[in-house]
Length: 262
Image (cartoon, rainbow, N blue to C red; front, side):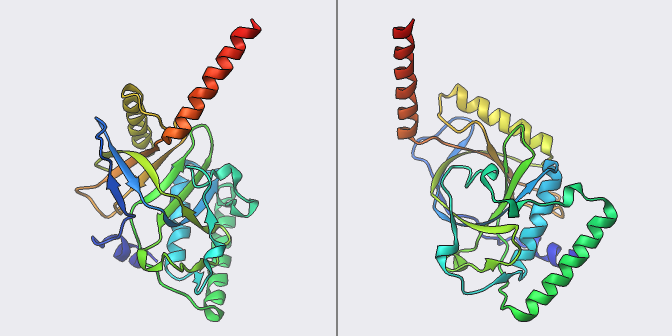
């Protein structure tokens, strides 16, 4: 497991989701237009952000290493209907991960049972090895202990990605989106991600940019084995112009109604 993880993450030719730069530059950050695509995700609840990322990445690693079924139909994908792709709070109960509340002995037994189940599934079901991609993203909603860990399904599997056999892992079809990005180097702790996200939010507010401020994504591009030239990002989703216009019109309307009632 450790050797496989190290071999995967030390590769320097990992694919990333396609994006194009915005025509208008925003001081202090990038504005990227990401294309629509299929992502593999898992939702972790009741754990710290650091632990959620560890658990989520492990589940996704099992998926790309063969814990999946081939020849799935695109109708099984979950179409994202919000910038959070979708919000963890709208997740089915089956996405809930219990490991954060188990003691060490129970946790070890659960992992052993899962390994036995994976071996049994691999004997009967066709599996597909999937290449790792970057970044590994984590959806953060401040004030909650729900996190969604995701990675982009490689282009060669986009038209028909293998279906996860772990019920906690799911595929989602994300719509194209405009995303504000702030990059930084070094080893990224939870505190560092939070600090950089705040700096990005402050920049966007100062520049008068309209964005979804109630959540952000962290994006990691390197393995723990990479010591130099590390790259990390935080993302805020840009609000669509029409969406911002309708919100402003609604606020103006409610303001006028309030004045009439006074």
